[in-house]
Image (cartoon, rainbow, N blue to C red; front, side):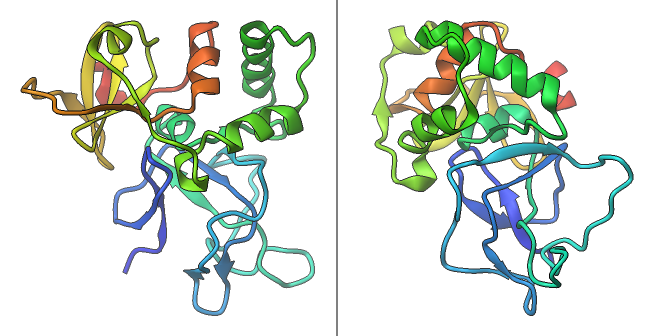
Length: 212
């Protein structure tokens, strides 16, 4: 049975067989004895996006990875960086340092902050994350057309993203062209802060299916 560690754009965590391009975490949120999630969905405001392979380090997923023998941070997985950003995560300053610096620089440009620090970025993001209780932002067609590539929206409750001026439907397996039909409700899924980071020039990593 697959472990419950795959994150959708809304920030919810599922047990599915499909894997992803990136891992990441929100602190320790699992029981290593049962390799299952606890009721809490984060223990830190630093929700990060990490490389699946880094310096040949090995971990037992949702096991005991702390030097003390206790549970280390809980490994979560994302289809791609676009998905992780929508869920409210941001690049890790340790294993993805250059990307984290680029994200921070775009954050600073977007909000007029000379050298934004990670805790300040995390604090703003945390107030906007759906999975942390952030409010839903309803948008209209005009606002949809003005979103930058990589921004994720919900069309009648289903996740879609913008790329090259077109909409792609999201799934755990990848993207496919959106079925254009009547849209009763449009909501912004990606946190507003990250939307502005994308608008300021940050370029996330896409799953290969977005290229087709």
